Amino acid sequence: MNEEVPILPIVLGTLILAYFGLEVSRQRNKLRAIFNVVDRQESKIATTLEHMVMSGELKPYVAASGA
Image (tube, rainbow, N blue to C red; front, side, top):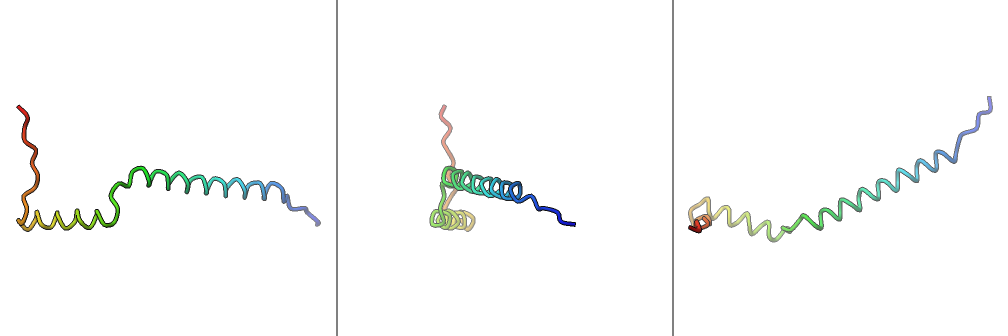
């Protein structure tokens, strides 16, 4: 049997999937840029401050009640 492989639908499907993957990646990077406000250095500083509070070197911030 000599069956022809439908090349056009396969190529078109592959292109659609590739575009979808690129668009998801682009949107993910955009959301990371918007919502990741703490970078690696700031994260280390925050961790150090948390350890200092847990050890008693610092007292945690408590907002004053505005009455």
